[in-house]
Every structure is written in structure tokens, then in C-alpha cells.
Length: 583
Image 1 (cartoon, rainbow, N blue to C red):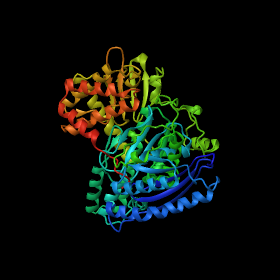
Image 2 (cartoon, rainbow, N blue to C red):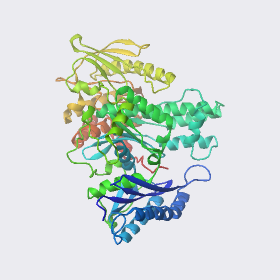
Image 3 (tube, one colour):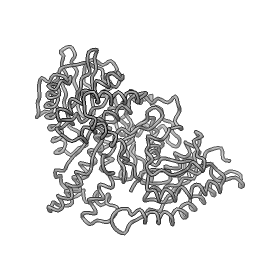
Image 4 (cartoon, helix red, strand yellow):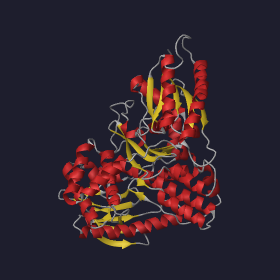
């Protein structure tokens, strides 16, 4: 066999029948694809499966021919070391066709089989082509939208859509106005002639929702608002939401690397927003070339090579596909066990490891310079690294610490990636909400910093200084129980925190304080209370070395003060599969 790994990859989760040949020695990726195009509307599972049945043999033969032509080993040996296939998530009928083809080919060539998670492949192709060490990944595709980061041997879901995927949401609007599939490029084109109109904007911690904005957009169209204005505003709000939660994920994890994955990532406005956000906070941003953003077998083959080299192969009898295969179910066997997975300072300055195959050090340096990644930055992690005073940059605000004066000043400065009208509205609304709910929580017996001054026009708040350490660096079951009891008291009073992560609780010797109520709101819906708990729960998964005892403490603490029906609904929220293929 060749001295370097060669892989035949097969992709077929929904739209694209795709096959690829990857040579790890040259970093060459050959891709052949045939995408399903419905006559009208969105994806039709039966038609998609019929297309997959017809197209997979064709694209597979082309990729296999390329593998044979470029094989430099003995003629009597197979042209690839293994066959990798998208095992899930996706549409069951499509996945089964791909799985059957992969098994047959692996047996025919007498090479191992590798089962790849489609969502993890989107992340890994970005990590591979960027040379980043441990980035946060925003995946924005048809049926999916989520944030992933590496922690303790797995990719953890930090935030995700609460309803539909970003591409599907856009397609629902374009079908309403009578445009053919795919709708995304048509919205992007129409948006170039539009002006901003107000539409809903829903972010809950690092989760987000598109159902409200889609309903409002359809109603605006029915009310004769120019479609160009609606398309422009859809992009500004939807991509603004995705950019905001990406910044929140960078702040939570302490990472300064962001990669983009998924077909919607081909949109120029989304890439522009993410790049501008990263530049503003001194982080590095990378979007792979378009052929690696849309569904493709190249990313399956590249990750398949890494898994094969790690010995992560499948026996034929264990290769069943999984339409609901979540990325956090995948043991990340191909990353070194001693690789840093700590989010706090896991990618600092020039010490970050590059050196991925096929990415030169010069290209990596150029990428950092383009996004301002080499600049010094002050992040919220300064609070946990001994920085007692000065200005620190959080996810959405600049915070001035004056411990000697017992004062903290928080200013929501303009986000240049957002439309100015939207940005002004969000900053003023959130400042007003934070002031009101911080004081209300205190009256309900929840420790919060005393609010001493509010300037709504300048989006500025002044608080009592309650310490420098956040919960993320002082995690214990008792502290988590305490925070959960605080949440239950908020819910009994009829409102939610909205963004309770391990960064938004301050701890000192006496007590744990809740801070940053800017995404909170009044509600009597049990679903909202469960989502509030879910945000906190996911932040524990994303930041704790051993999250399970803490997650149990969360539930124990909430049960002491709150209602059991909220915990029951939390279990429902956790059980909802958002990953249903790139439909």
C-alpha cells in the first residue's frame, strides 16, 4: 500500500449524492457530486432516496476511477486504504443507500469501513483547512444550526436551533413567495436591493429560534412590504443571531478561533458578519472554500482518514446508519489525548498549534492577520486569571472593574457587524431589561449586584463589585445546586434569566451572585423555564471536566425550590433531536 493514507468517501445524508478520493500525502481532494433538485417546494424524502439510488453508483465510479488513476502502489493492491461514509444524521432512506454502497465497496476492495458523523465532518474540514488548534464551530446548514466545541474527548453542543434549521427557515419564506428551491441564493440576491424593516430577533443564551421571524416575514410579504426589504432584513436578523451566539460561544470557551461549516456558510453576508465580529474581538475566523461548505464527500473522506489513522473503523455488522446521530455522541479518537481541551486559555496568541496537513504556516499567519487575530485582546477570562481591575471585553459589553471603589461599569458598545437600527434597539432593550430584572431578582431573594446607576441612552449600567471569579473556575455540586435554587426562585416569580452560563454567575467566599440578565423576560410558560435550565445545563457540559455530577446537582437544587413539571419539560427539551440531515 501507499505510505500515506488514501480514502474513498461517500456522502448522502439528504440532497447531495457525492463521492470523493482523498490523499493525505498530497492533501488532494477529488470530489464528484450530483445534487437532488426537486421540481417544486422543499425536499421530498422518497424522491431524494430515488435520486440517491440512481446517482450514488455514478459518482462512486468516477471517484473510484480517480483513485485508481492516482494510485502509486502495486497494481494488485486496492487504490484506497478504507471506505468512509456518512453514517448520520440525515434522512433514513438516503443514509441506508449510502451505507449499503459503502459496505459493498469495502468488502469488494477488502479494506476497512469508517462511519463518519456528517456534522463533525463539517467542523473537522474547517479545522483541517484552517490549521486551527481547537476552534468553536458554527454549523449553518439546511436542517441544522448549532455551535460545537471540543471538550473531554468529544465535540459538545454549546447552542443550537430550538426549532428549524437556518436553511430550511429561509426556504419556508421563499416557498411562501413562490420562489423555487434553493431559496438562499435568491434571498441573498434580492437583499442587495433592500432596506431594513423590523423583524423578530430571538436569542436565548447560545440557543436561537427562527420560527417567529419566518412567520413575521410571511406576514410582512402578505401586507405588501417589498420582498427586497424583507430579504434584506431576514439576512440581517438571522445572521446577526448566528453571529451573536458565536461570539457568546467564544467568550464562554475562551477560544479565539472560529470556523464556519454548512451550505448556508456560502452566503457572503454571513461570512462578512462573522469575520467582522472576530476582528472586533481579536479572534481568527475561517470559512472553507465553497465546495467544502455544501454537503460533500470530501469532508467525509478527510475525517475518514483521521479516524482510520486512529484505528477507528467499523465492523460490517456494526455499521448501521443513524438518522439522529448527534455530534456529541462521537468519541473523538483522532485528536491526541494530551491535546489541550481546557477552554480557559486554550488558544492563546502565537503558541497555538498549527501544522495541519495541507495548510502552510504562511497561510495560517495570513488568516490571523486578516481577522486581527494577532492583536492583544482583553476577554472575560481576564477575570479568572488574576486581573483585578481595568477594562475587560465580554460577549456583548465592555466592563470596567474598580474593586477599590467597589464599582463595576458595564457598557454595551455598538456591534459593527449588526445593522445600526437593530443594534441600537437591542442594546437599549437589553440594558433596560437587565436593570429591571437584576433588581427584581434581588427582591425575590436571589443574590445579585446592587444596581446604582442606569443610562439607557448610553446603554450603561453601574453595579456593586462582587468579586472577580466566575462559576466556571469554581465549579462544585454545592455551588451548582445554589445557582439552580436561584433559578427556581426566578421562575416562581414569573421570569427567566435568559443566559445563565457558568460565566454569568460570580462566586466569592460567602455566596454566588447571578449577573447579566439582559436576555431575561417575564413569562409563565413552563417551556421557557425549562429552556432557562437547559442553557445552564449545556454550559456545564461545555465547561466542566466531569459534568455529570454537576448536572445531577442542577436537578437536585431546582427540585428543592422549583416545580417538578419544569424538570420533566427539561427532559423533553433534551430529547428533541435537532439533527435530521441537511434537508
